[in-house]
Length: 122
Length: 110
Image (cartoon, rainbow over all chains, first blue to last red; front, side, top):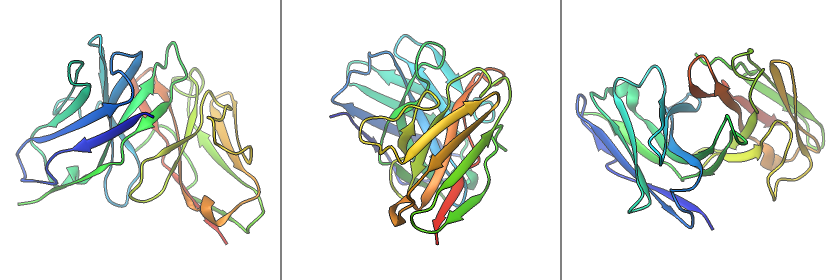
């Protein structure tokens, strides 16, 4: 059974860096999936953040790419998210997920973590 | 502001049918597979439909998907109280080089 679980601080101060980790179990992160992050700010819809393939290919949301880094660690089967210079607008539930290729595959998020609430506040 | 537009809400009585539209363009829906997700508060989104009209194992055939041109549709028949949730379409956008979600639709069972 494939499981994804997010971890990290639930509270981050404005202007600091948000760092989250997602541990993938039951499936190799070396598989032909893109692994990445989606968030949902309070009262709004799902917002895609970015993805990375274990071969190094990355794609980021245009609105966030200047502040965001997604990385995968094949030795620990984890992916991570770093977002710098956060503001209150970055307060959201953050989900990690696995996306099949959109050019060669089904283009769907098959796997999801439970989500973690991150609040940006001083 | 998403490039995929959905109606904010739809509603129907138990046992009835609802359809949710997802309108896009040639840079997204027109050239890529569409997927649909159910999202309940404080839970992981759940994949309902992939490749426009296929259901993952465990998804009942009350749910159906279709695509025509630059639009896609999710249908739910035999509406149940447990179907009350937010629903999102999603696909790739080649102009943005990004995965995009629709604006989301809240389904209410009257």
